[in-house]
Image 1 (cartoon, rainbow, N blue to C red):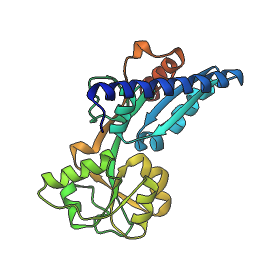
Image 2 (image 1 turned 90 degrees about the vertical axis):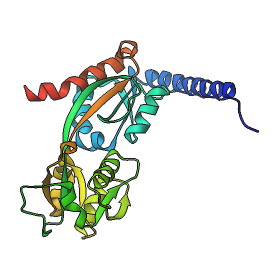
Image 3 (image 1 turned 180 degrees about the vertical axis):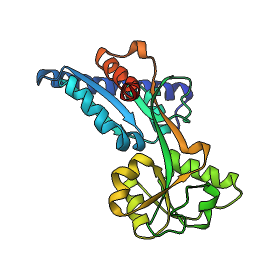
Length: 244
């Protein structure tokens, strides 16, 4: 037996209603303990490691009674979470398919090649991605935007990506590179936070796709709750505020 299309639609809405009922209980309990607002959000690994710790700390310092539920997902999963109303807002890669939802800029970052300190490419001002394909690579999990971007770049160069191993996070990439397992592609801020202290080196990638944008995705900013709107406004303005 299998559900009809009408049954699938009913199941989707029934699950959402059950989640909403559960969330009502959670939020009312939070209010009883002094919390005055609750925001659910999803973000990709880059945003969580590079920017959100400081950005959310600044927000909480101004709004101590607001609680944030943050979940890590790949960019595609974040858009699904917004589409299914599982979260109030999401932060994902700017090249993700956002299905026509409302988006606004959050942050810029740049991808770099991360290598052991004694690697043959160290010392060059920059390299193309094709220059890296003679060496083994450490890849992020298959659903990550960085993994998909590097595989596409290898195909466009007409070469195979020599992928030694997939790992789940940036810290694991850095440790595998440190162990001499290969090179990796990571955001610059991640290298600063994790790779430099391990004695790793970076080389700039001379590729347009290495310059990335992170975006905030919402179904409709006008329909956000007051506390979600506070966080939305804070996140979308913080890079501009830092530049002034």
